[in-house]
Image (cartoon, rainbow, N blue to C red):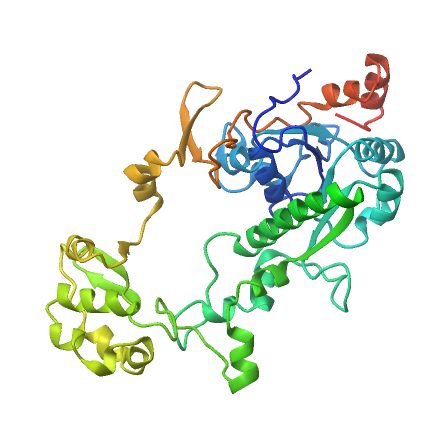
Length: 401
């Protein structure tokens, strides 16, 4: 049996039941766990021969000792309960757990929870204070609700995929699961708002987050530009349309990113590259004038090996494009506690991302490494009042692992 989680952070005492797998739902639960919520993650048991089982993320990308290093980030501070949700006894366990929880998070395709007898109507009837987060590709309503939806489809339908890439070339995806992560963060915002409202009403509610809507919510002026002017914004490479100068410029050893679009910043930028003529040009005194001459301005930038030193001295927002090796070696990342060293079972150390956001009085933390599959099954079931004999009988029938 595994001991109960350490109480810490602003969410200490908050009980969360995580159902679902991979990215969006588990990332939302991970964010709550980082700040002290007691997250019980439900996972499918392994097959009788010991293969498979668990969240598929356990074996995604690079593995260390047979387990994904991504898993160590996504599931830290959680407890693992292995249940076969196809069995009525397992469904009964979920209902009992949900009756004592504050939050339930699920990211199955719409209808899956209802098929197990675990729909929000059932759960809220037993626990009216429960907050239920439902994350899906297209939401719980509408003509697309039953379509399978992954993050890349949410990014495409939400509008961001059309904007990423170089003009005239096929769009590209951001190299991380951006749609899932945005949906997860919107889900966390919804949970915290619902918990705040519950303090007044005493009632829980259902939060419906669609992947595409989370992406669409971050698309700034895309829709009103189309509605008002018929403008369909397209990909612009590393530039930001309508904001100038803001781009990536070549240096001898790579590229430097420059955000010189503030009026005062623009003058300092031009001075730092020896173009005071442009700094004093009245037609370039504001963003609208600079946008009209953006190609001329981009061509006017002169990149040198010490570009960042010159730009920093001129107080112009600038930076280089980081690889993960740059991140791991950066003193600012280290000073901000964003590179956490965790000792592995073999004695080696592995860096994992630090905690964000940073709270001054009740910060979050990495207090428990990601669990093995079913590591906390006995402890969770015993906490529900089941005896050792009852747990053994459930295990023998494959209900739990």
